[in-house]
Length: 177
Ligand SMILES: [Zn+2]
Image (cartoon, rainbow, N blue to C red; front, side, top):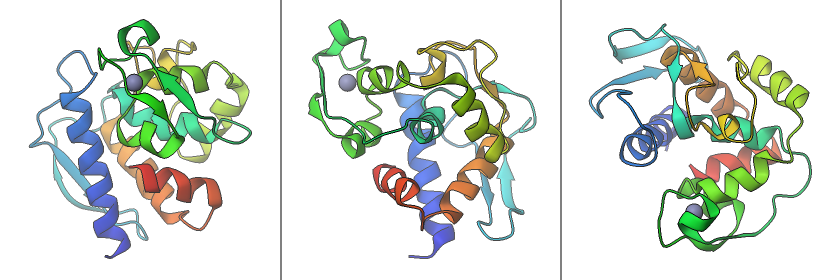
């Protein structure tokens, strides 16, 4: 699999999951997409009406929040609604990779409570995206509309992420997408 193809698959899965999963509001349909080259950063194909306008992008921010977490990713037990997850009956015991693959809100809320806002801002800047306007454990995982990023900016951030596959933590994140 080429890096580009795997990025497209990863981004496509993330968009699709987001739309089906835990985003409230009209982010777009699964037919909207932007494809960029991982090496060049150039847009290959785009079908998104206003890709520069910052919008809440929901769970798609989770990989960048994860990068701001220092330390070994924990195991966590998601008890569903009681743990504030979108999956009412819960995901049960999860490791990082499964939590990301299933976009478990409870796992990521637990993670995001431990994150230093300054570190998150540094990570966001490194990937060319804005930091949360309203910083809270919730906005750091894409709940609400306190963290707005342009779809184009986020696609470039994912391309940057894919290009850093050799970095151990990035590799762990890409494996969960
Ligand atoms: Zn969960």
